[in-house]
Length: 391
Image: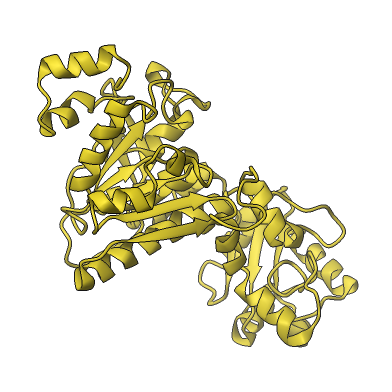
């Protein structure tokens, strides 16, 4: 954990991946993140399989390190009073309910800005806070389908292929929310004013299609699945199957890299065919790659100055020398003292100290601690718990 955001305090009302990833990025940079969870099961990601010790989800361990957890029943008036006390002391609030839910609880931005004019209030939703789809439910697959990403992913003759990574949740939601929050914090340093941030996962992933839409608007031609330069439409930028059933990625967009590939593979007659999309040239490439195993290609191109790498599984990624050198995984303690490897924060800072990471909290682990900092004594906390305001 870094200390670059030391002193920034964040209330996290989000659930599942988009908001969890957003606040993970901020927590890993040193922000104090307090998860506000309900009196039921809390964040649903806690019970998603696979479950590890204590029945906690592996996904929860991955997303919730360096955070604290308090249980509040935000439908209860006493819990709302507690929440407003917290708002006065915190810098940022992040929520991911459907549009209008926080307003119905009387905890919307216009209400809470009266408690804290400097509050940065970020809402993450599928389609945004306005428009005809604002109340429509969805998940990552729906947002990337609507945005056009799913339709562009896959082979030209095949069906759309679901990406392994949740692009809308992480890229369109969590990451852009973190960027927006950091920008708003920077502006507040200058003006002293907070503001409201509306993050739509659909909007976010459409922005990821900047190159494709730029091509579409300037040429009038509709990009197609498996037919474009960067989605498998040309022989120089593609994935090929090897003799042993492995796969090799080839990304030789520049002529110098393509020339080097052709030289090493012994087919300099292909130098002028770099951007070919002809079936007969694809057939030549497939035959070339089917003649050797994946590891033979790795050895063949080990010293070559060209863009070619094997397609790895996760076990191979963990043991890759570059990944090891960059220290992208570290061991994290869990509830019972057992250690698990987790992905660490990917940004490297030259002048920022690191501190020990903290394990993901169990549900409501810090309720008493937080209430005590607000001035509640033991008897008051017991009373709040007995009446269903806190858990």
